[in-house]
Image (tube, rainbow, N blue to C red):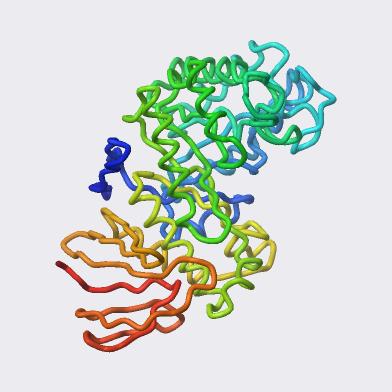
Length: 407
């Protein structure tokens, strides 16, 4: 396993980024997409929007349906993927508010009416799939829109999304998840419910940890989405570290369990790039930035998503799967990344085995290309990789340039 060595110290926070295995993860809406994505170089999968949540596995109180999860696990295991399973989403029969609208119908964003239903469910799946699941995540993008503890209105999020219970209610669910998973499968890890960097998310995360949520996690889960460019997530990651430090959790790994972008929509803002160049650019920069900031896993959403995906034989589209493959193959060689910026110029010092090099690009909307001269040979990926000999003038823009600088 390639080890990621995070050497960047967040000086102004006085927090050292944790060192952990570097893992490239993805989502797949259909099992048939898994092999194609795994062949690209991904080594982990997160099961969400896959028909494998609580409401799907137990549509009725006394009825279990393991068909789809078995299919996902069979193909994932055949491709040697680590599996992170997001298990929340309350079935209507178990919901405390069965008539409340939610992202997937009614009742699914509510806590269960009887927490023992959750307890039996978690233990059953952890025991049934013992040794086959690396980690469990109790809930996706928790929101607490009705909890009165928040200073700002709707700090928790949209009332029609993924969790409308209280902070305490989610802590209770996380506690049960941790206890039952460790009881049924002690080798499995438990990830925190994921948080989304929208609204007053830091207050939401802070209140969750203050209520005891940090006692029941092996990993902190956050969704570091960005609007235009990957560098926009850096303030969010650093604020998250501040909140974790406040609660004595600086030693806990952080995983970016969901990130993606609508490449087709974003392409209009990047007229100088082809769709393939855009895919390669944003994926490579995303992973470099996340790893530099001490985020050891990144799960892309989603390989076969019709809006934010790359490829699907079932949906009959291919939006830069070759570019995605090229970026993933390059990232898989990287052991460490240390990224810094001077205004709009970004430089990441990268180590990959015995090789050391820099990755350079310009960030910012409507950034003007800049002419530079590198002292070392450089390359830039596109359909045919461009080679720039040392001393030659080249124009850099948002597309990453790999400079063979081993200084």
